[in-house]
Amino acid sequence: MKQINLIIFGIGNVGSTLIKQILEQKDNITDLQKLDIRIPLIANSTHVFFSDALTGSWSLDFEKFSEPYKFQDIIDFLQSNDFQHTIAIDATASTNFVKHYAQLIEAGCHIVSANKVANTLDIEFYKKLRKKLKEHNRLFLYETNVGAGLPIVETVQNLHRSGEKIKKIRGVFSGSLSYIFNKFSESEAPFSDIVGQATEKGYTEPDARDDLSGKDVARKLLILARELGLTLNLQDVDVESLVPSNLNGKTTLNEFKARISELDEPFKQKKQSQTNDVLRYVGELDVKTKQLKVELVSTSKASPLGQLQGADNIFEVYSETYTERPLILQGAGAGKETTARGLFTDILKISKQIAHA
Ligand SMILES: NC(=O)C1=CN([C@@H]2O[C@H](COP(=O)(O)OP(=O)(O)OC[C@H]3O[C@@H](n4cnc5c(N)ncnc54)[C@H](OP(=O)(O)O)[C@@H]3O)[C@@H](O)[C@H]2O)C=CC1
Ligand SMILES: N[C@@H](CC=O)C(=O)O
Picture (tube, rainbow, N blue to C red):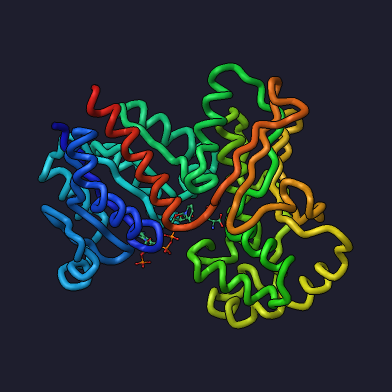
């Protein structure tokens, strides 16, 4: 039975849920999928916990036995153990962490990531990462970068690889903004209260301004655009930010949280100006014009976007085959359970390839 070692970076909403799901499925994976999946290392930004056999009390064990680390300690650990198969899981939102991907690949790791940063740094980083992966015959899966557990990345990859000419992708790419606007349109609660609800539910980024400013949607658009061969960068995305400039980048996160109620009145007026329509935060990628845009639009309540509930994303893919009626993927686009399941799926995809190698 092939032994697959997972080293997990990030034990917040998504990472901790992934650990829970793996421990729950351990017998199924061993008995049915003939895989011996182990988690010898889990880490947050400051501490690491090494374990021969993670148990259900891993969170308490982490609190009691974890130790401060430098990233070189991780490489030393990998080199001293010389695992046959290792997958590094990035369940962080860290820009610094992705700069360690090359070292992890050189140390023999495949990579599975929920973190969108690696796929949205400058195009030179994007190309160098893929060159490094090819040189070391390692895989990098990132389905949860767009649409959480929805298989939009794989769908776009498969259509593109099979020669289908994708023309446009449009929809609601943000789970938190989907939740915020469909709740805001049907309740009298202040906008800032609903943003707080989205954060409490674990939908927003660690810094909710990444969602509200459109940066998260811009990243998702860029990831899909690059899958279609468009060598664009984040600054090429035309973004309508929902955060006033004086609150985005010019304040600390705590200052933003203390002042977020300043958004209430402007959004109340926007809502009052909607007659029969509702507000939706939309992303659109036009392949022919290479235009990527993120904007707040008014749409009929009866429209597919107007009907969205919960933290649902909807992706409308228009192509040569799907012309008048697009290919549509819709479902939860945020949430720790669905995202962790998406990471787990990517892990099993790599494990299956390893097992049959
Ligand atoms: N929440 C969701 O619905 C979805 C999230 N994602 C993505 O998943 C990622 C994680 O999101 P989420 O779990 O909600 O975020 P959380 O803030 O809950 O957790 C982030 C975790 O990453 C750790 N971390 C931060 N920097 C580093 C570092 N340099 N090295 C190791 N660990 C680090 C944090 O540790 P510490 O506490 O020490 O800072 C924390 O444990 C994000 O990239 C997000 O975009 C993708 C799809 C959906
Ligand atoms: N913060 C993101 C999480 C998933 O990518 C969102 O709201 O969609």
